[in-house]
Picture 1: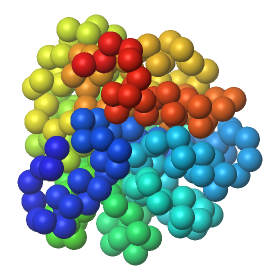
Picture 2: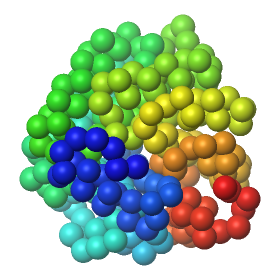
Picture 3: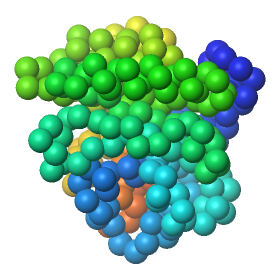
Length: 261
C-alpha cells in the first residue's frame, strides 16, 4: 500500500487510506467538463458534506470546483485533483487535454492527482506522454498519482481482459501509485488482472442508474482482488448519495458482511 518514492509521497499515499488500510473508496466528481453539470440535488459543497460523513476516503475534483467547497469538508476525506479533461462535444471525445499541474494541486491542498488515459484512442500517444510527464512531476513534488486507464477506441473491445491488463501495465510502468479501470465481468479474469498488476486496482463504479447491479459488480470485483472502488455516477446520481456512499464504504472497509474477503 505504501509504495515507493520519497517520504512525502509515501506519507500522502498513506493519508488517502483514511478509514482502513485494506481498501480505498474514491468518489470521482470530475464529470462536469465531459458531460455537463453533475446531476445531483443541492450544491457541490452539500454533496461533499454528505460524502465526508458517509466514509468516502477521497474525492476527485477539477481545480475550479475546489474553490466552491469548504475546507472542512476534508476533515476525514482527501482531495485528489484531476489534471486533464475533454468534452463529449469534441470531434474526438476520447481525447484528453492537460488542464492543471501537480504544482497547482499542491497549492490547492490536494493529497494526490489523477490523470485519465484512453488506451486505443486516436490520441493515445499524447495521453501516455502526459501521464509520463505527470509521473515525473509527482516524483519531483512527492505526490501520489492515480491513473484512470480505460480501453477506448474505434477498434478495441473495452472490457477485453488482455487489453485491460495492458492498460494497467502502462500505468504501473510509467509510475502510477493507483489505477482505476472498468474491469471485465468475469471474476477469474479480474483475479488474473489484479494479481498481475503491481499497484492497487480500483474498480470503476459504472453508469448512472445501475444501482444494485453496480453494487453487485463492485462486490464481485473486491472478492476477486480489486484494491478498492472508484464510483462517481452511481453515487452522485442516486436519490441519497450519502446512503450509497455509506454502503460502499462499509463494503470496501470490511464493515458490511457481504462475503467480501
